Length: 195
Image 1 (cartoon, rainbow, N blue to C red):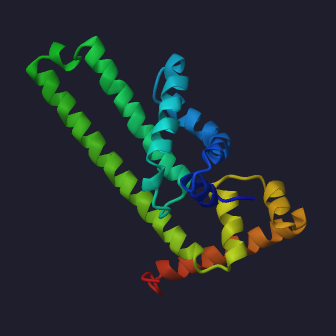
Image 2: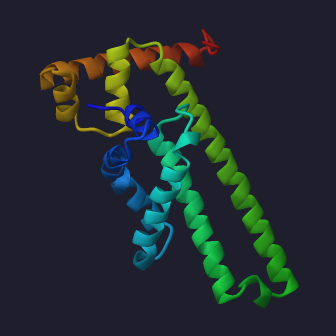
Image 3: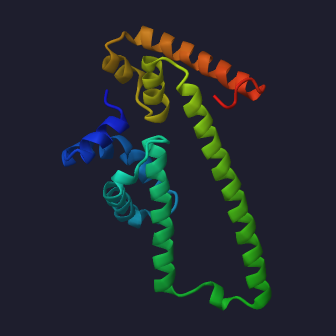
């Protein structure tokens, strides 16, 4: 099974049709993410905008983080753009508030923004740590874990992609998870966080 990075390379090398494979692979998560943030009637248009924006900026994808994380960041930005545009069309809610209500709204929004920033930083740190731990595994185990956990591929598809039996794939996934857990636990105890 092709990794997202391989497909991205094919698109960047001129195979525009390869992008369709990324669309099929990631459309459910994008539609789900957009569906939580915008009205149902507008989900298809915003999701399409996400995929167009991703295609246009594919050259900027640095592969430091999994492709779906990068794509979901674009989805969040497009949802924010949607609400900004809608706010301009429908007028400003804040203009109808008195000074005390505005101050309270500002306080709540600032607290929410700080909390979202902390959560985002913690998520990015966790992703970075897991990526470092994955680099400690052999190439096949690393590719298998990325397919199962980052690409959310079914184990039977992963097994077929590697030419393994389902039982062998399950066993390797179990061993790789244990190895990752051990690496992360060692780092947590201060053994080699800089690896």
